[in-house]
Length: 463
Image (cartoon, rainbow, N blue to C red):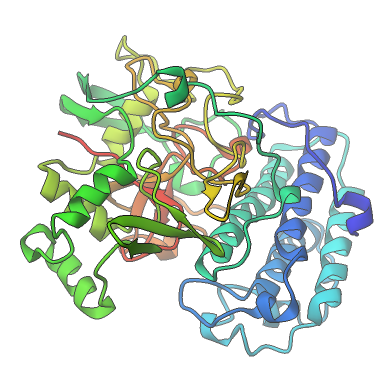
């Protein structure tokens, strides 16, 4: 299989959710996504493919089988009514039926068996792609494609959590030759707040836009009061000031739930941070780098973001405020698809798709990690009309809002995508460096439990 698509590179750069999606464009995206999945596990040995038993990650050997199962579950079995390509597939790979803590103990079919299963499911999917896609069939394909894309992001943070090597170059195609446009080197910095007028606007996706997840449905009127939002996400320099000022020891800065999390987890500093002499360093995959002050804070959970806001005399934006800031132009009326407007090209505008090299490595500064965050001041071409930077990409941004259904919510065909997680998860917006641009839009919602520090999450603040 690696010989067929091992070095595959998709030429698809525009979002795939539109109603005019064609057969060849979809097939190309399916091949490229499976290529990334394979590239993110190919260099790992059998022991690494199982990995440490943790509540926050899956064994990668199980997870790659799960994405293949999901593809055939909805396309081969649900849509065409045919039987599975693998005996007992549901017993092994159905994430809603197989308890998380048992996934290390399953009698999986082994590396080669799972790779064969992945090849057969993709071949079966491509073989049955019609020349003309109905709306229903397009949405089923995009559901399975974006599901795998989201797992690719999880493969990256699993490699970080477990201290594996950085993602291999085959997984992404980062620009290793220079700084992203609008970086510090070009003298472009974004500081201070943007004043936003607020008003009544439609929160959520509107019908007729093509594929959207069920939790984005449907747009409804909300009122946003005037507010001020930081031009950039909180940087590592800014968060280090909070840490050095005793932020993790000052109980008055933490909510009751945050204090409870601190006690239970015995946390005294940010995830992956290491104090060496007078300087902070952090672990990036399997090596240690000195803290880059202008990179965004990442691997921070909701409790930490909330405590920082109290320390700084700030607050997290609500979900409606975040979408208003990203989607409403200076005229306060026209809602845009992307922070910079309606133009779908994200090239040079956002750190998505692993587009740029990550942090330089301490043992070899000339050899950057593949994929990762860039300076919070970079990529001024993606600014909103009001001057907010990087509302897309780099790091997911926590909001103050719990993940709840919109009025009139009805679950999609995959009923377990949203509904089981309402209430105890918090909303994040904007994507991160490993998110696929092809699934991005201003209405896209992400959600995690507030204690999660392993994901590519940061935050920006409001006055």
